[in-house]
Length: 112
Image 1 (cartoon, rainbow, N blue to C red):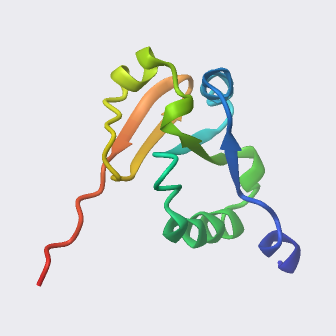
Image 2 (cartoon, one colour):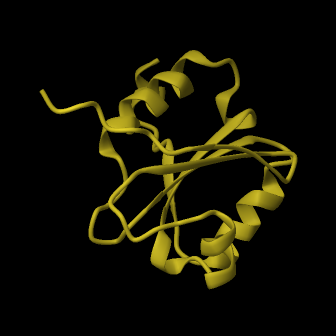
């Protein structure tokens, strides 16, 4: 179990070609991508959740992959298709079998 805790579970994507490659690989894995602005960075609060999912799943390396991607490295066409904005809002996209499966834009909690 401790070996799994030391494994890297979130991998950076460095280009639009990398993004296209992991979409292609989503025929084998559920693919979760955190798209973020370079000045904002990926959602670090999600890494423990990714790690927990990875540790608790049977054969996780054969079932799920987690990635982060700087929005500026996406092609303009892909940014438009995913409705990527310049705001510092998390954007999570999920692909399975090379198809866009789910888009999550979390809503911040109300200020009290």
